[in-house]
Length: 623
Ligand code: AGP
Figure 1 (cartoon, helix red, strand yellow):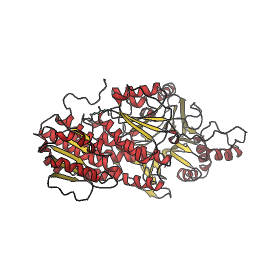
Figure 2 (figure 1 turned 60 degrees about the vertical axis):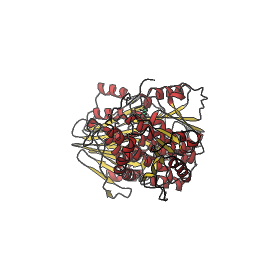
Figure 3 (figure 1 turned 90 degrees about the horizontal axis):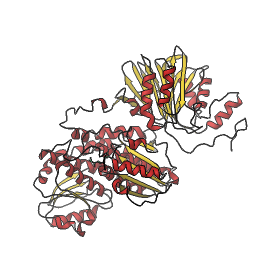
Figure 4 (figure 1 turned 120 degrees about the horizontal axis):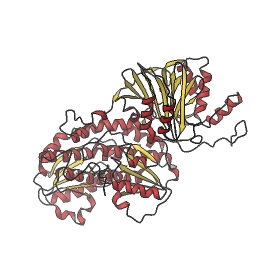
């Protein structure tokens, strides 16, 4: 057990890694108001304490407090922090209790630092520095960075001083730093924790995620691990771990401000279907460290190793993403896993267990049944996590842990890009938990992440099945109904395809486990009935194909969706949509796309209201 030179028992390194929020702004005008507004957007990441530091005439003005950003705003009303350059932070305590002293930024005479992540060797460094007579005000690991950097700055330029400081640190960090004697630069650094840069006219930004930056810009770049950026109001320079200057791709985020703008699309649903490669890529950029093929999740509300069961809860399409994730959790982890419809879950006679993790999936974050199910879990004192598209929503606010899908506003009532985003988050979460529990080996983990990075381009390829789908759509116009069949994780996709067709074209459609047909539904099959069979190249392939033959024998007209290059010979397969294959576990993402397009084109032929189907609302905020 390490003790500080003053004999005090040092804080045991906290296992839990909390997510904090960072913002930095270099501008031609005062920055404190914009820093506050951005911190409010980041509060979903942590809000034990908040703070900012601005630089005004070479004076570091630091303001911080325990509690919410509103507290900090009150302090600034009384004593403003002027200056055109500054950094801000919302904290979820890791080292040291959430009070003002431990709030970020941590400043010395010449530098001020905000930090997200954990410095694993902070205790050892602290002892070394105390032996040199350094005094610490806080219990945080971040203050170690401040003191080390202040020493390095005595005889080095900021960039070199930062590099040499980072070499001494072990662990993860996203940093924002301002310098008393350099009143035009903010330096950002990333190792493990996400960090993004935003660009605007006479202003540039540093932020923990695109969400913090979206209200000020839609042009952003992501730092990769080891990168450092030097940001002024007019320029941003990036350097890699070896101090080589590097260029970063500038991504254009779907701009919430012109949400009401369909662009060249006829309706929002088609825009949102074709946006899916972009929204998937943005979500991957937010969570995956591409240089290390690592998934960045922090502030787990429960130690992954102590979880014994995961319960997934949602409604409609969100419930279907829960069902898909159930197969992934069964496949990649040793956890027990359940998926439940929120309107059923909330009335069950449930046995709650503190070692269970309850995951709530909701695009709007306002669905009444899902919200009520969350309240029930909160009342029973269990750990909750929400996977949402609207970060300020009530489900997000009431959860212990929020994982935004970063899909941008979804206007069409029929959920499309949010479904892909929900599955993407659940897939990454499942992989991360499996890795932290050593349920999957590191090679398999890294291979899955490498494959996942290809998702955006493969979704792009799947969208090219549209012309074939348009031809098939006609078969549905005069049919009595249709069946969607799948096994394994294709079964929830069958349910989702049927739901899309129902809610958009008002035609009867049924999703069913392919193996269940003999137990009754086969009676529905008659000559010409459209049956969509989802049969990717997985362990169920041959069984599903034989179910398909049973349907053909009774006159069903088949649309086969597969990614297998195995020849499925059958003259009665009306169409085969051959999708790209990367690996089995990713097939739900790809088989979803033609089903979205199918529902869309049938509804178009029937002249239904695509964005606002009859009887439906975008968010069901009542029971
Ligand atoms: C999906 O296309 C529907 N709009 C509906 O099933 C939706 O998924 C469901 O109401 C849940 O909404 P939420 O994701 O906002 O909670």
